[in-house]
Length: 312
Ligand SMILES: Nc1ncnc2c1ncn2[C@@H]1O[C@H](COP(=O)(O)OP(=O)(O)O)[C@@H](O)[C@H]1O
Ligand SMILES: [Mg+2]
Image (cartoon, rainbow, N blue to C red):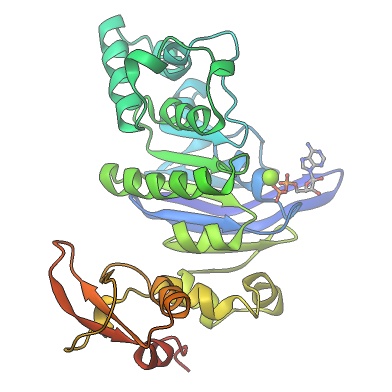
């Protein structure tokens, strides 16, 4: 558990992060979303003490970070930034091994770990490990950045706009992969973005920041249906809100007996995906299949529209 208590940062007497408190449970992913200049990066960097707080404290599993040595902070908190921050004159293997080397791990242990991490991030270790950062695509460099942050099995991962430099297709894949890795490893992640769609896609909880304050901290469905302030409402986007809400709801609970024409859709997909398919193929209903491809019934447009109406 990460406990953040009344964190404040002032520059020249002006507070850019104001009295922010939150608890982050182990194994969860929390997304901080807000416009540029709202204090997201400063907040994140106070957690690993790249920025020294003016006031407030951070505890990791009960230990105040002020009582931790710099190397211990590096080991316990992984950090990923937008332009990946890889050392240009080091190979991928050496970049990934940065923290384990600092910690004095043995050579074989480091090699095995680098191999394991590159494989986890779907990079061929034999091909990628000897390369230099300039020999990687943007997506590969981003993955290497994540591998490096995970190297010493940190308690927590801080990610500052980690997908900001990727084009939309690679970005969607990277988001999906991060979700899978997070679920598989049970990582605790705090991720910063200015993109509300990304926040809704990734966050179990979303903290909306504006002018240094947290306006609302809640699960995405609640942010969408019960925005705590006009600022949150404007960030959620009035015209996009119904579609964002549908993207959070799976098809499965709406499956009813009966058949429908045309290609089927997976029950685990979202109502947004179902609506898109209905519009594009001009159908009133879609056949629904489960993970093994067996037909389970159908979902109708009427049921979908009714389900997309937020609770009042
Ligand atoms: N080292 C610094 N000195 C002075 N002002 C800073 C410094 N770092 C950030 N700021 C200011 O703090 C505010 C928040 O910045 P930042 O945390 O980078 O926001 P975000 O990541 O949400 O875009 C901005 O107004 C920025 O100009
Ligand atoms: Mg920033």
